[in-house]
Image (spheres, rainbow, N blue to C red):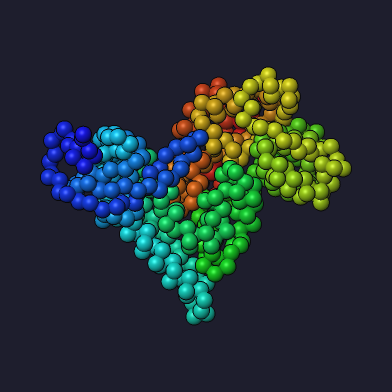
Length: 426
């Protein structure tokens, strides 16, 4: 009877295999219910060469699987090239490819050590805030260069995604001490860019202690977060100008979140006799907005000028449904939400929203311009990769596909240039 140990792969090998027997711990990333899941598994090595290793395991590994080795061999990762089932186990040939991964792991270990040293410095008064802030920023910038280099060399999206998850796991003991970075890794509301995160970014105040304070500060000072603060201010000014020049306008606020700009414009809304319909799918966000607005003269409890409504904005790609649910509008706006929508879906939604405007109405759409900021920290340091990387050319193509006339579109940017507002007139 043939056994796993004496199976010979039928393809010629460039390097000779040498007998090598040792228990090996490895991890495998798989997809279940559209989510990535890590399996921690065991196997037994059979032989090894300069570029490959043979193992036997009871998990049904298949060609293309990438394994991350936790113990047993020096290399960090490898790819399954072939697999043969013998009885109840699998004999597997693996091509080792750990050079770039080993370099990334070494940079990660250095980062963790530097952060631990900075944490110790936080316990003493010799270092001032500026020195500690600079030390944290320097450590993050150095490790970001390592994972940026990793992406350039590896290119395979599945490998990069698994390496990102592995990096976050290896750095979690330190990073979890930051309110902002930890939240941007775990997203306890169940979705990226939730209202609590945005509210905290708007307030621009570190919420952690010790090294967490300096990690919070680093996060808040990222150009994309500074741009988010500029975005909400610019939105307020755009809406203020519209409210001052309109009488009893109907306004639709899509994916409204905390309604910060509605609160700030309470006087203008009251004076213009505007009717704001603010929709969101997050009950907590709507409750937060209701509480905030209760301190104004446009409270949803005592006034009919603001309606907070739970509604799935993803349904708003259909014009007839929009008409039956909301009717014609004078102003429609959303900031941040459109960045998360796939292009084809976004085209249909913008076409439907443009059709919902009254003559002379205004659609306000804000986007992040991928050519103006670094996205890589959002994919590695935190898990904030939901918004799509688009350029100004992409935006213009989307509007054209949505059949929105180019002559109807004007644009303005926040001071950093990262976020662009498109003002679309009917």
